[in-house]
Image (cartoon, rainbow, N blue to C red):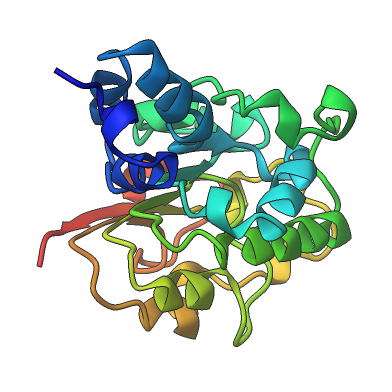
Length: 241
């Protein structure tokens, strides 16, 4: 019996693997032969899921912004908190918050090194990072799931922001976001306090076509003293239309 690599062109095999969303399916496909593994693992499997901190991933966003085909391989993208203290304020703490970042392929880093910041990045730096992120997400035409666990919500709120970009992809099925109150931020840099909550952001509210939406927000809480507000007061809503 002839191997698939002998029957089908390499380009066709790449298209077959590109149609597989699940990393486990790609792995099952790849382990059937070394030739298929050479196609599935380095070119597809390692690009399916990214779990990163926005301030440490500028090189990743630049890479995807210039590599449409590779960006199209991404199915899941999680933006993690910058600081561990941001996830230690209450009961709501999904495993994805605490998980270690998934290390991207080394070729995505300029010079093989990620950029690191101590403390919380400035408002201006965060805005620049978000602009790079949006440029990259525009190329992720097959993105199925997006998670925002960073504090605070995105600082860019305008027509071409992150939520508008996600909505125009037409592929997003699952959204998991945290709309964190600024009362839990420690030493928030200037500019962050003015960031609008997601629950009052027009581009976020305009998202359509999701199969699953999970949002943890304080926006509908009754007004409370900052000293007494905790994450236990948040509304956690899962919507399965």
